[in-house]
Image (cartoon, rainbow, N blue to C red):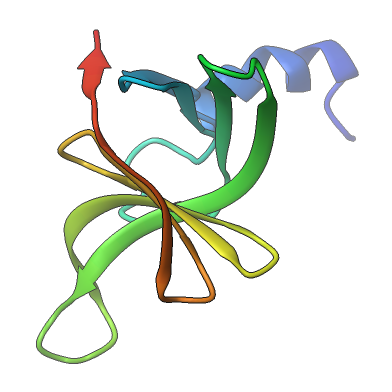
Length: 118
């Protein structure tokens, strides 16, 4: 017999870990939210919410964690941060708090060091 809906809802917090971190750079406020199960090495359900301090424009993107590759060429090794795609633009949020936005793999649109807010 299937579990009653309330029981399923009560178990959800144990299945999915929501972890949010805020990054403050000179020109941007960024919130990173991961929606993967606790203990996962990689996560392809990461939300980027960014807001320009200058224009007030906001953007929300879905992306993934970003890692180096181990010696086997497949397994994820060292955590580097997060990456998000918006057409031909890639947003990189480095573990160190560095925000980088690149268009067409070569044109840097944003390059700012920030501080993680805990």
